[in-house]
Image (cartoon, rainbow, N blue to C red):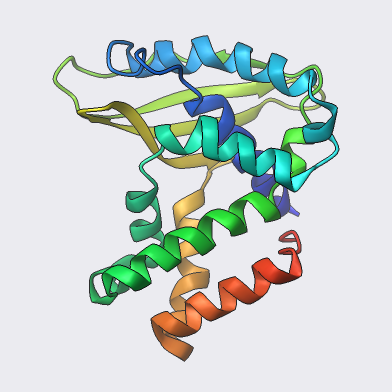
Length: 208
């Protein structure tokens, strides 16, 4: 149940954290960026009935247009695959990124539909001006107990980009790394790609 709750919130966390307008990411501090765009994104989701209903095509379009440009997805995928990433060919690395993205979108599409009256409260960020990696910490407040939601971001020439998310004390990369490691040990890189592709064709049942 905890993993499912993490999963449903995981994609939402990405949306809230990284939907920045072009031109702002390179000049805004990471915590300022997250606070500014979170309200905009939540308002947009509330206004889109298709996303609230879990329309995968609409969600995929949102991810491609507004989220992926602000995520270091190669780094995220490499971290999930672990030490085996260096052994993969460029073609295998590309396939892994493609299938992992589809897996996240299809598995956690219901997260966007859960946005109703939630609000975000941010903690002061502890970072030095010269830091190139930071953690932005927040809580989601709504029904029930506040939900911890943290974001790891790195500074790049293109601005701040997210590469991991923590919900309820569980980091997304760590969660998938153990699953992927088992598959790679049993079937290799191509076996992992085939398994992800098969799950995606089935519509990727939600983790439970």
